[in-house]
Amino acid sequence: MTSIIIVNYNRKNLLKQCLDSLRGQSFKDTEIIVVDNASKDDSATMVKDGYPGVKLILNTANLLFCKAQNQGIDISKGDFVLCLNSDVTLDKDYLKETLSSIGLDSRIGMVSGKILRTDKKTIDSTGLFLGRDRKAVERGYGKTDVGQYNKPGYVFGVSGACAFLRRDMLMDIKDENGYFDERFGMYYEDLDLCWRANKKGWKTYYNPEAIAYHVRGGTAVIRKGR
Image 1: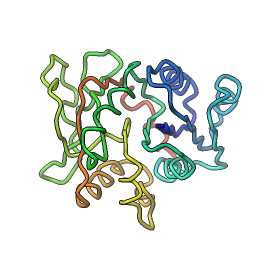
Image 2: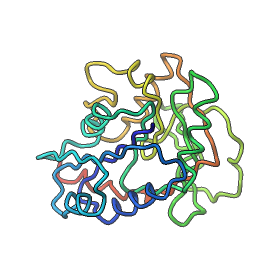
Image 3: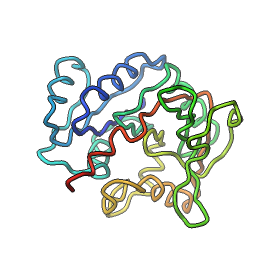
């Protein structure tokens, strides 16, 4: 089973699109967990009324991404965990493709798909890398997709917007600050997780047939007022 965890804060319309794409997955053995960070736009009511099979965690304050994502992981039951932003939708075979990739090697702890923008032609990420300045580099970011990243293979890590993770890896790298280091709050937490996983010998595989679509910056405004 794959557990899908979505952290949401005042993004009802995007969350609905995300959940609808999960309903359409060709792979069905899933549980969906929405962690709502005290939204004021009736996101929780929308989930309760329209998606009764979804598990809902209702926080009384905005705990930011890392702590909320860790809450979801803690109650999840799947052998694999997909950490998904509410501003991401998935192609119908996304889960099927990521599962086929993670099964190639027991040391593959993460799988990256091809993440495109919603225009379906601009690349958002084809894998996360570590730049010379030790900052995150999303491979292909902002480039037009002309098939230049259609070859599967190993990469450094996965974008936090759509991160497919093996539970055994998460348990291996967890420390007193959680799976995702809660000191980050949000931003760069994905690079940190990938870095820690690499140090422990875990691998990341890129599958261009696992396609997702990301509204870049669709959740970014939640940083305002913090």
